[in-house]
Length: 224
Image (cartoon, rainbow, N blue to C red; front, side, top):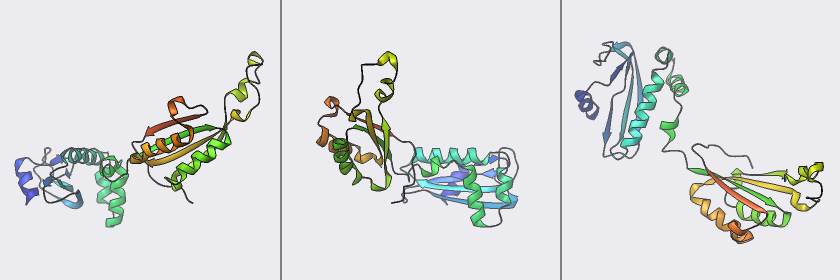
């Protein structure tokens, strides 16, 4: 009924054989999206006066208007891709129909509310003693999404250049280890606290650099 009431305000037939009826309800907390194919077409009073053969309905929470707009825009843009309607209508099963639809949708609007917000923490450490202590502190927070990269400081290469001879000498500090950890954004402050429990305040620490990058998208995990 809510979809019909929304449709009475203005047709959601956007042309090209596509209609996207949608509405918002107070009674639900998440989005419901469905796709109906009508090979013979159905009258949706579309702007190009052509029948709709592909009907995508969206029912969203009243409290998530901005997400509703983004989702509506994403689906509308995807279905306007040349050949999209024809390919979807040719789908031989609901599973293939879903796969074909998702091949046209970037996924950002659909997944925005589902994906966990994560950050990439990078810790560059000189010296094995501090590295082992820091690693022990971090690994318990993100065991499936932490890696260690072995590297060398730039001084290792500069000391080989004649122009810089005498400025650098062989030492353990030439070798560095880099801890990369993908953590929940809520844990970033805890990561910083744990690193500072080893090296002291980072803005005064030597031999360690910590940086944080907030990610727009991340998914998956490493095998143990």
